[in-house]
Image (cartoon, rainbow, N blue to C red):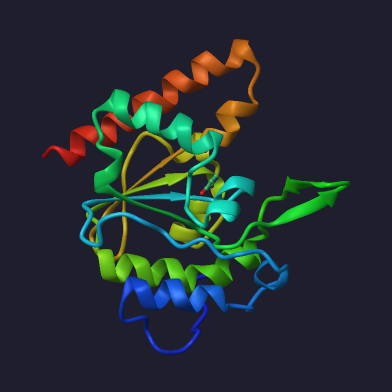
Length: 205
Ligand code: URA
């Protein structure tokens, strides 16, 4: 697989990954002085939801999807009938990549290499949680799972069966929805909602 990294012993527990990522300095983001954010949720969840990377609020609280994108995600999960607390929620990249602008920190997309380096930890989480369904939010998460860059608009809406037999569903990232203006937003939110409903249907099977 493209960019596959071997960072040593296969992680033996979710807690071990949580401890190890705090000290991970394998890429530039890991070296930027921010706090790593580990995934959270049941360690035997049937559904794993994967975002891109923690943002400002996630870094502050040390928890994934606690900011505005997380709120929008939860609203749509609830609407689709997916109990958020039963999903294991994590990110493709565990540190927050940003560009300083005055006192603010502006989000920056992780590079393909950074995603590929951090895949080691995500693979560790997948190996331990062993979800049968994976929901990848946005292109960075999709790249991490597929090992190549894809167009989310082209690959959404149908499952991709991964090596371990789990089903990967790809959709847009809620931060993308938040950035759209009113006109395009309701259409894109409807598509997002539709994607989540397909996952909900698989989850209940
Ligand atoms: N966006 C993400 O991709 N992940 C988070 O945890 C928060 C925002």
